[in-house]
Amino acid sequence: MEVNEESASARTAAQRRAEIRRRKLLMDSEDRMNKIVGFSKADADAVRSAMEPRFHLDLVRNEPWSSSTSSKRLSPHMTETSVSSSKMSERNGSSDAVGEDDVSRVRPRPRGELSGDELTHSPRRGLHKYLSRFDDAIKLRGQLANEKAAQDSGVESEELDSFCLFRLLGSVALAIFVRIFVCQYLSIFAPFLTLELGFMGLNKYFPKVEKKTQTTMLTSALLLSGIPAEVINRSMDTYRRMSDVFFDLCVYFFTFILCHELLMLFDSQMS
Amino acid sequence: MVRTLLKSTFCSVFVLLKVDHTDEQKMAAGFNWFLVLSSVFLCNLVKSFLPAISSFLSKIFQKDADQEMEMRTEIQNMRMELSTISMMDEFARYARLERKINKMTDQLKTLVKSRTAQQSKMKWTVKIVFYILQAALMISIILKYYAEPVTVVPSKWIAPLEKLVAFPSGVAGGVGITCWLVVCNKVVAIGLHAVS
Picture 1 (spheres, each protein chain N blue to C red):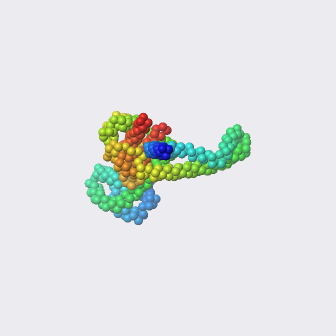
Picture 2 (picture 1 turned 60 degrees about the vertical axis):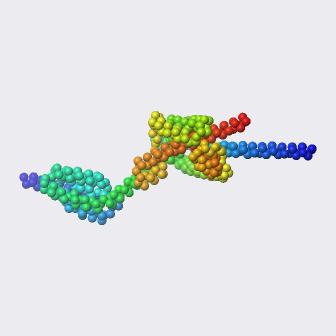
Picture 3 (picture 1 turned 30 degrees about the horizontal axis):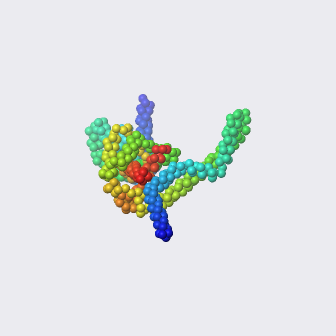
């Protein structure tokens, strides 16, 4: 009997020691990560000292998962949303699992925690921002290198689709028609504008070609400067449409002048 | 009488020549647009052939091309020989041959690296020379047709953009060199793209 009691007490002591060792390891891993990232130890100590009472409150409950979640909260690598979600889940968990005493102990926690969290938010936010921007810059550099390699190998990404060809032929035909019949009565740009309005309406009847968004130095610089990708995409789309209209105008004007010169040449030869 | 005859002949010849000269001037002015168009077309055509030109020039200036081919064939032969040798039975010979192959492969890699560097250098040189020549041609064309339009149409045809189109000649109804250059560049680029 005595042996059994001794063994039971030894087991509980061993369990306690194992628990303490595990917590120590978890805390140490956080320290290690902070050192790698450059989060100063003094800041971490200050934060930890501020957090200690609540941490201690968590320990009072003697639940094995509480330490891991609270240690996760301490880590500077947690995003704000994940921290808040963990806090929310913990609050929900605490309200469900724990009795009134624990709730009363837990209740002051959120307010106190906020003031401690605010201390960590600004360096964490700045660090997060820096890391995410660095990742974006590396990814964009990779994309640029790939696109440059594709261009060098001679891969033509843009081909004349059916609508482009239709626009081309429409502009040429209209220019010839305007030169022969219309130009004596009004400006040549009026029929062109009408043509462009017609193209805008006919666009939906043609199969849409998915144009791959090209990563260029300009788009990379705009992305890294903080402009949202959607804004950049819309601007690029608008720019593409404007360049299509300009291209139609160039073809139309060129055909008109060519037609005019050829007619003048034939007239002079005939006369 | 002879004097008057001579005078009249001389005058008529002079008038004819003047008319011819004026006609030639008109013809020259009439084909200005074609001259600009053909220059732009030539530039774009040469631009599309730049990779072929640079590879041709790098082949001419390349010194170790034959040596590279010889090394490749030698490595291939040695590899075939290596495949016939049994590693268990003739290990020394196998190892010696493998060392030879590795050494020659390293030499070949160095040669290929230098050739690639030379090719890229040649490509950049050809590109730069072309762009300089193109810029010189465009500038000379712009300076030549700065004051006169490449062609003239009735100004009401190109209203309300007649001033923009006529820039920098300022002639009412004229098509300025800048506008015509831009238009030709666009059209020739798309034409060559469609053909290629």
